[in-house]
Image 1 (cartoon, rainbow, N blue to C red):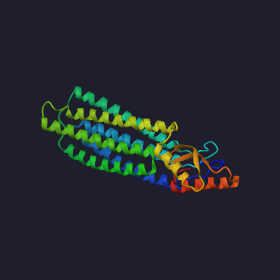
Image 2: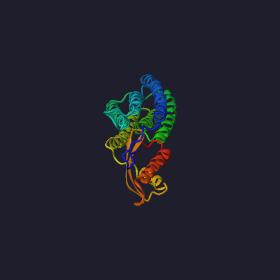
Image 3: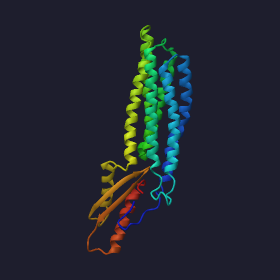
Image 4: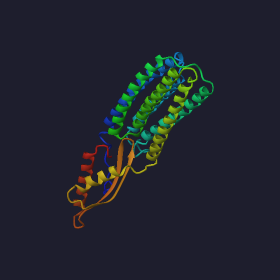
Length: 294
């Protein structure tokens, strides 16, 4: 954060802790997705389920996206240097942008494969594929909740994108389960229900990817954060003794941290030294209240 004296604070002391905390759900998701990719592919091939095979492709994309998010979080924690005086925080939303591209790519691949098998349907999937899908849905939903909890705490775009990757996988698995159930119950003439389910799942993935893409792009372009965050910072400043008002408050997000430019109003009869001390009090209170403000 920068006060009206032009002095800048040192790097946020919570930054390294925030990054290490953010890596935990990424690491866990990476290991689980490696297992699920293999499990889905084997079950899809031997169980004759195109929806499960499409799910395996999507989980493979999850592995790649988790690696990208991991790298992005590590990069965003690098200290500022002469070429990057504001740090490397933009690496974090950029990884969210890349993850959304992976999601869109997976949606397109699944849609193409689904249409192909809708036009030339095979026999119905094996019943055991439903048990595989139930296991997948439970695991991915738990991963989504854990990752989203961490993303909310850290206000991380890339972890939120990765969390939605898990939720998208759970949704496509649920839709695939519905399609397989219809195919098994309906019998002859309903073989393509599994493929229609995969197509529906691709549309859900594409929709979520577009939302993440828009959010990541706005953050990369330094779009203003929510009014709630700006008002919170203003109210903290106004609670400091002898602060008469806040003339300007600009906030932008850099990775897991926020940069704040603020002008506070004080009594015109105060000395420069007294005004300088009040500015430091404002800065100190904001950083103590919100450790991710830099």
